[in-house]
Image (cartoon, rainbow, N blue to C red; front, side, top):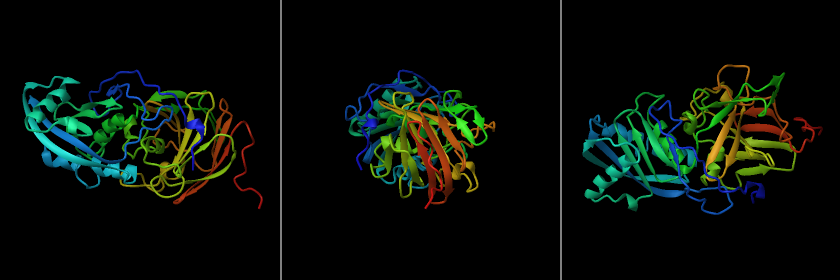
Length: 374
């Protein structure tokens, strides 16, 4: 399947510069670069195949000792909970990381970004490890928590070793590596008007940042789940048979379970508007999407407004605005999203463990019946 020309976007780069101090306050850790897209005018930045990683465990003056066994479990291990396993799962095997780990000690205090990763790389070079020979450079220092990463790019620093299910393992690594892949911090449309089972967005909604409006399906936006579907397409992990653009044709559509078979992502074009698309995906529980089967997120369609160019920026829709939390964001069966500005309507007809059935109208057309006459 050839994707619609509606997926051709200009190469725009985010200009906000930021730094982070704790793993729960990572608004400021993505440092934008101006690396152009590999193919001008096509909004994908594929990262596939086997990529090599130089991981430098660095001890600056005053740093705590690094638990190397835990570091391996969080990164290079093939066990669930490691970054390596997380990437294999999110990419459906299309991206694997080959790790080389080296330990260095530096007699001066941690110098901050970007001198920190440069100092670590210089010390590793003295041991014969040249970061230029690797696809990615990752540095860890067991100091005050947080991290920084180029977006997009090939270098990142993680500071601190995190323990416990909610703060451990893959999360901070997936967050920073997501920036390297070109994924920006997301936001959430909250407090959208709701009349009966109809939610109106995004014009009258409020925009809440990732803190406190976490997108639990996106580690780049404070969540712990696997990367969203549109990230996966952008990174080349979904092919054109798994993604479709809805631009002119209203109708009934079937959405498969993300990471399994069938259509994984629908992008509905918002012609001439920003955000550019409405992205639809459907999930079931996994090791990383560890919500129970009765959870809102296992029984509705995740809706994100998105713009994909030099980087990707998502705005999750809180499709249950009547609750005070954003951990129940999906559009549930029987509910309808109305986007008046874009003349788009989306209704979730039904969901089950194999996927979701949805009705979509574009161009102001009448929304199709979920159960059309035989």
